[in-house]
Image 1 (tube, helix red, strand yellow):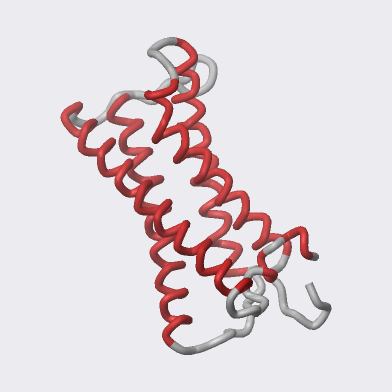
Image 2: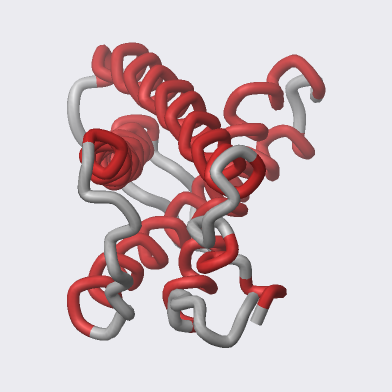
Length: 176
């Protein structure tokens, strides 16, 4: 990164990439686990890890949103035209989908009753009939999030390789 280019602060960069990594791992587990592992202890353990990582994502998401509101560096707008509005809308949709997915995942865990750590289990609450719709909506929202994240990534790459601006470089931690 050139010394004169504005960049995001370390907190924003770290939380951005941590969110991206968690979402990717959670989506891969949720999408492919049942096809890859037979029913049994290992598969149950990976599902437990999926739930635990989902809780970590919830904490990271709250921290990220609080950081962006209170401590995160605001960068100058590169272009205030229609692309900026698309970018703002995309970011808002990403945050809303993340919140929806976490909420649906937690609701699903309570309907199922999930084993936490050691002797701690979530109690089964709510109607068991909610399990299938919650699972379906959680999965659909996750797929939509991944599609939007791919669009977000493609836009960042277009900024870098087609328009040759600094948009991508401002969020790359290793470019500091």
